[in-house]
Image (cartoon, rainbow, N blue to C red):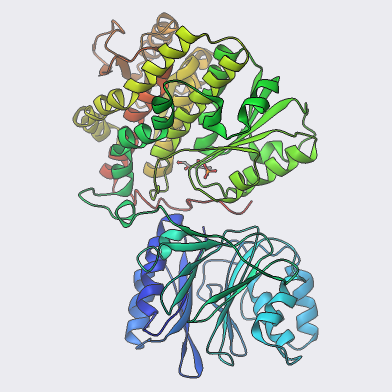
Length: 609
Ligand code: F6R
């Protein structure tokens, strides 16, 4: 979604802004712009479409400056037009904004009455005018920003410059991430560390309600009461290499292939500990996890499917009731709340608004114990949670989640074993066995990646199809859902997933020779049932594409294509079976020529409702 970058330096910051915006492209956007202070005047360029187009326009107009702000916009209030793109201006004040201002209508009426004219349909423009309005009282830019944000309701990360104050930039944060980057004689601001990582790795994460002033010489931070505060400086672990493509064609392909490493890193602490200590989830985890009597998982999209998989593990290994709900549904219903149940939020980005709001809502219902599984340190959801487990997938740039999903599964499996131990269901021998399975996981995933050439051949057949069905049973049903989601989001082929046993209750009507049916059919206790479901498809002329494992005792025949995934002992099989469905989606999208890393209409971090 929207991204912010800003810089103040003794050198031309335009390349810093453009590079930063390019690094934010992965989040999803539809327009971009920069505003710089050139001499004593603000100059602005905005374009719909790719950052590269805006970059060319800025170059053609000879943009060069030592203070500037930039933005990638993902349209919410107002269409995808140049006039709605950020930065927005008000009489020499320029501003970029992430988030949504809820009382923008009311502020707009007030500002109109004060004589301000509006050029855009955005909620953001009101903030620019509001700051300008406060400046009229003779105060400085920082104070004007501090007064303005107190009149806003909603969520924002803001970066503001003014032609009247060329020596500084001011910023504010509430509900949307914003961090300051510290350089030598230069300072930066960004919504995501990747935007500034080539300039500095020394960062300060602003907290809710903070404002800050950046000059070349330093940074001053103020809390929500405008009192100066010190916020801890950290060294970001995001590496430039994780933001570069290397030998791959797409970030999605790179990230699919990084999974053995990402999983290895995520399970490292358990392997090093020689088991599953509760401390994998934080230092107070033992007491909390031993005391819970059930689990409620809240998440969206792919993370929700990780949650659906975890339910099988938690109920089977720990014998605790576990419900899984889409966060955007949970937050608006009168949900049953048992304070002894653990709320588990799963979010790759840690910023998904619906998941964050669901977490807040759960707390308001009386839930005391919360745990977050997240891939982005210091993001909003883990910060608002009692216990945290960070997956160590590394930066995920492709919009379609891949390594974040499988590492979530690894973390959730560890949670299930920890709960099983603490609730007396997993003994030492079983713990050792689960650890052994976990230890082999990166290797099994590597073997699954070696299936790529066979999957490419399938993808060529899929590329011409308009629809696809995915079937799985038990633990593999969520993987069927994930396969269908991956295929639809990057190849735009309509795909649906069902538990295979549901087929005859409706979706079988869709099956004909034009409907490819992907079946996840490892050799587990449900295999014979799945085989009968496959017969139902064949009998209607449907073409089957089956991911079977080495022991599935299943062979190809007319209309039945089989790829054998590596043998993988037991309960971690869903992780291994995720790899071929990811590869199928990727290569099908490639064959159809879609923009794999930035599929249409989608954003990486969904920070709006
Ligand atoms: C799909 C995908 C999305 C996200 C969802 C939640 O490939 O990535 O469905 O899983 O938007 O995002 P997070 O995990 O960041 O909360």
